[in-house]
Amino acid sequence: MKRGEVWWAKLDPPTGQRPVVLLSRNDAYTARSLVIVAPVTTRIRHIHSEVLLDTDNGMPRECVINLDTITTIPKDCLKYRIITLTREKLRQVEASTHFALGMDE
Image (cartoon, rainbow, N blue to C red; front, side, top):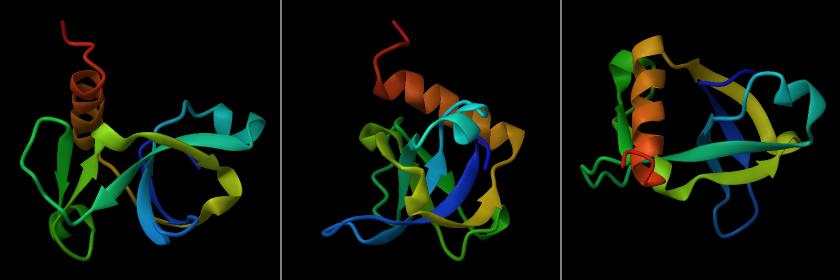
């Protein structure tokens, strides 16, 4: 596990199973039982707190990483890796995270 990977996560209802992007620092995955993630969704709003993914990125269809709903989940909810984001996509995630948290000011 490492920052910038997209994993299938089995979460509690009503969320259920969904892809998430790992946001925790890399050394947290060996030391912590909880990890920080952002959900991936097909509900696209075209706002600054979203990062677009599509088949060119290895996803089965167009979707977004929603940085407005960053959350912490147990590491054992992560089932398997889907893709690893490119460095450019990870930079977009960082910029969108700063926007979502109001850190651009």
